[in-house]
Image (cartoon, rainbow, N blue to C red; front, side, top):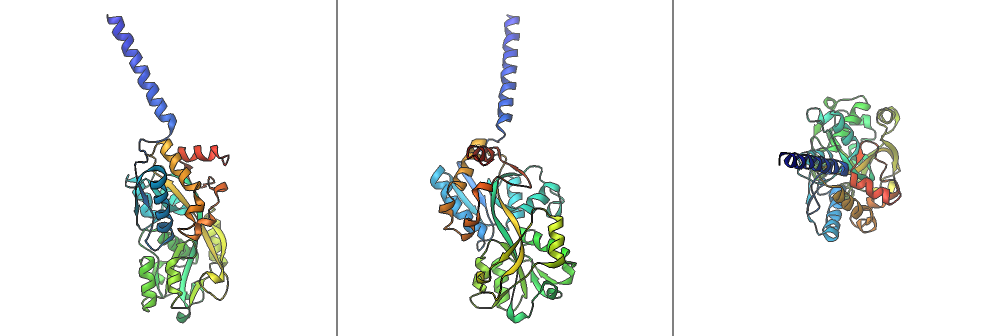
Amino acid sequence: MLKRLRSTAVAAAVASIALVASGCAGGGGEKGTDILTVATGGSSGVYYQVGAGYAKLLKDSLNSETTVQATGASVENLTLIQDGNAEIAFTQADAVDQALKGEGPFEDKQIDEIQAIGALYDQYIQVVTTEKTGIKSFDDLKGKRISVGDANSGVELNARSVVKAYGYTYDDFKVDYLSYGDAIDAMKNGQLDAAFFTSGIPNSAVSDLATTEKVVVLPLDGDGAKTLLEEHDYLGEATIPADTYNSAEDIKTLTIPNLLVASPELTEEAGYEITKVFYDNLDKLESSHSSVADIDRDTAADVKVTDLHPGAKKYFEEEGLL
């Protein structure tokens, strides 16, 4: 009888170990796709518009109960994922990089693990003013009233980096922390001279400003841009076409890759499903914002700053893209 009990105990232990090993091998968590919160950005931004279109696809394709959450964007979104309050989020590559390193806004709240669904379109760093201010270059902003985006947002993170690269600090300006919509209202009312907008193009808030004012987008080039490119290998160079906001000429600026990230609590299968819904339906998502046309499914697995979610990795491998 004793021998039989011992044999049973050993068998149970082996089964338990096998179960744990199997769970670890899957590489995912325990959450499915029944309830999905998509963390986006401000309601006038591209993240929100694309996120709303994606949430509808998730609901239609997976029968998920989806919620689109308007947020302060990148930094807040990563915190929501970390705290278990969102399953999917839009974010910038620089925010992910700083979160994993415990730098910038994440200095006191480093995130150990961030899993990507894939790369999206690039964000254009746009420093916007109007012709009537007389501001023509970044150096002309010294002493002026500028908005750097919501506090601890991805926009503010970019603004701080750009300001530093050009040899300034926030003390050299009159800084406000405003959303896109509030910044545009303040510029229309003459209460603000310029504002940072980091988004796909066109940004709907800036387009709104262009209906009543002559918009000027300041070039980001010269030594400041060179410094940023040397310090951050994920940044790129780009041009904002003149017809984007009816400007006088094309404008040189810098870009930051956007990423779609997932909670590590999602199972491998859930990660696979949400990745498939997104990248298999890019044609349908284009109606949400023109920036979707710039998403390249063939290179979406090339995420430089973090690892793919196991489900996303499975999807790209099946598609022959990894």
